[in-house]
Length: 82
Image 1: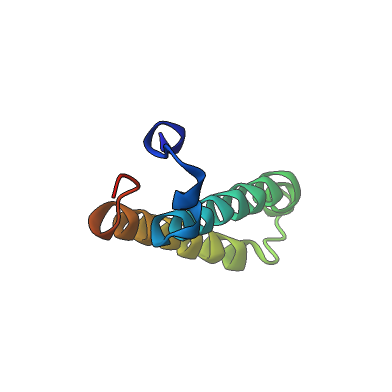
Image 2: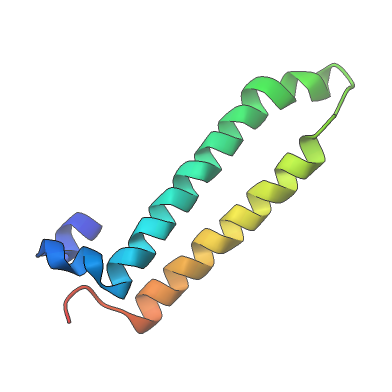
């Protein structure tokens, strides 16, 4: 959607572009954490050793909330078409 909305590269130096970058970085971090949970922490939970799983799950929730908050700020206060 951003590829369609952003018509000029200069938008990336404005608040909308900064928030878009923060959102993408947060989403990538969320995917990395989810991947770690599935590959490393999931088998530990299955084996009865949930070491670090709750902390990782809490971090996922915080990242989800942060990405949603940044998205809300982007769509409420800023526009790439200004």
